[in-house]
Amino acid sequence: MQFDIITIFPDIFDSYINESILKRALQKKLIKITSHDLRKFSTAKGIHKSVDDKPYGGGPGMILMVEPIDKALRALKLKTKSKKSKTRVIMLTPAGQRFTQREAERLAKYDRLVLLCGRYEGFDARVDELVDEKISIGDYVLAGGELPALVVAEAVARNIPGVVGHEHALDDETFSHDLEYIEYPQYSRPENFKGMTVPEVLLSGDHKKISEWRKTQSKRIK
Ligand code: ADE
Image 1: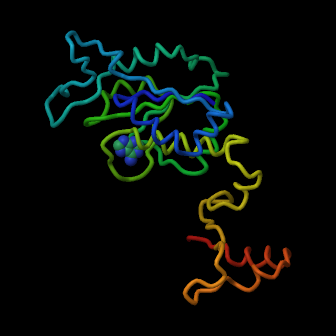
Image 2: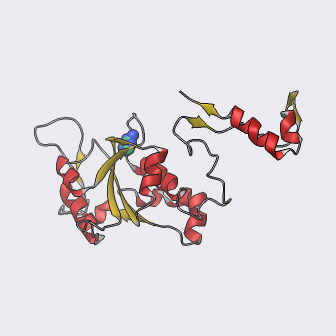
Image 3: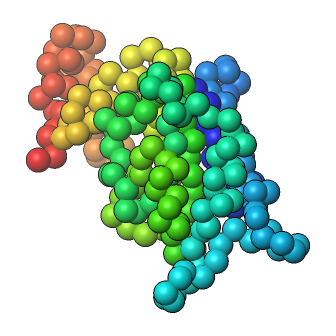
């Protein structure tokens, strides 16, 4: 899976990626992540390479212009027009479709995801025509799409076979069954921490009993 992140802060991704599960996935060549500096595609004259401008009709703040984004997308030479395309161009915006575990699983089936990060007061409305879908990671407004892009990249990458270390690590995980499922409680050493003890059954070595107990302990949120 190739992730292309279009952003005005291309350098903020490396430190997180290099300390996370994504690093191992990169090393194993299961994923590739490239961040692209939107300013390189500025159409403005002068040294500032601006990619934002005031909205027509007035109003607060600046919005990202359509032309640099169009240029950046064209530079990626995407084949989005073909029906068989395994590429998805995604705008990160609080106005998008809510991102969930199911969405992460769906997006993991693509070969290439282009993640377009906003800044300022949002995008020129014509950018909508350049993307396949819009995603929000939650009902709150962040300063930009960079954190959402990392959230989406990590959640998607974890669903690519081989990325999560232990073969069955995803099976019992919170949300893997359905969105109302919360994983059973887990304990590690010590057996007794300030009087709080590990449930007897987990120390019994009886795998059938343990499995039954875990089923009873998995919770539903709703
Ligand atoms: N950009 C700003 N806030 C966002 C959010 N909640 N989800 C996705 N992109 C965003």
